[in-house]
Image (cartoon, rainbow, N blue to C red; front, side):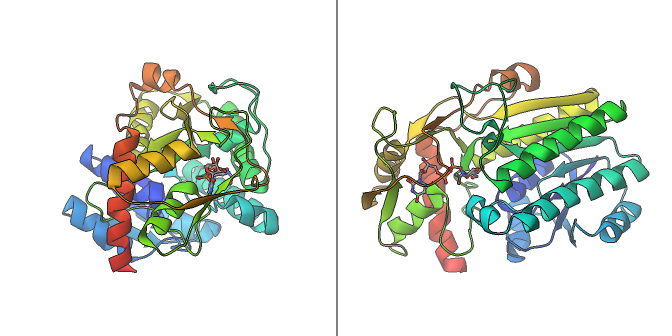
Length: 335
Ligand code: UD1
């Protein structure tokens, strides 16, 4: 079975490629390398000890997408390619809408032409907007607070309409919570351009001394210690969720949505403490103002994924912190 992994050189994509190959699938990576480095491929090949087929491709260009589908006999697509920075999406919304929606439409059109029926989409817990209650279940109301989130929301809607129009399709939407950690080898991990927006890459860069201090965005939220609570999930567990989703898509028709989280909420201070303890390093921090658009609490009810996909997250917070730090130390040598 040949799986096209769009955005396969990125943080989640590269880990997903490994798990798919470990599960016996052939993987084709399609990526424009706008937010990933080409040498990720060499490191991936070092981990799996074989060559990976890679296409440098812009998924917003239909001709390029069509060419790929005409050359390769693709059985299924996992679509992760897209822009993903919340702050940036507020400054250049049109780029986000164009990029994230056009690429999905192009892939779906090529799938239609080449009779590919299996599709897994990378969505986000961001589609729950400001949660009215936690833990979040898949059938709870959705809404968004920024253009990045709306692109995920709109893509979900497009997929529902496309599924209604074509009963042969099998579509799985995965709503990710907060992926952190890295592959155990330390060869791949999250490597954001510039100053990180997300908590864990910020912490690891403070721990190395590259950044002076972590700003904790608010300690007056209605949570156990006043700092924001999220559902952090090891990226390898998340990657394994894609393998289960692909297997499920081959056995079912229609459209289904699954949360991929651990079901546990940890505060920012929990993460800082766990990181310091797991790695025996200090993470100096200051309390700063709340970040615009942040919510107090967000964590998953992942029981549907457990029941239907037979998937649950296996790695605990200590392991996530250890692997994130192991990767950061390798990453310094690579950059
Ligand atoms: C963010 C995005 C979300 C996206 C996800 C992808 C926002 C508002 N949301 O989620 O749409 O799907 O990334 O990974 O950007 N924090 C600090 N200091 C920092 C960085 C973060 O205190 O320097 C806190 C935040 O306030 C939050 C927690 O850490 O409470 C997690 O933040 P982050 O890693 O950015 O993820 P989310 O905001 O949950």
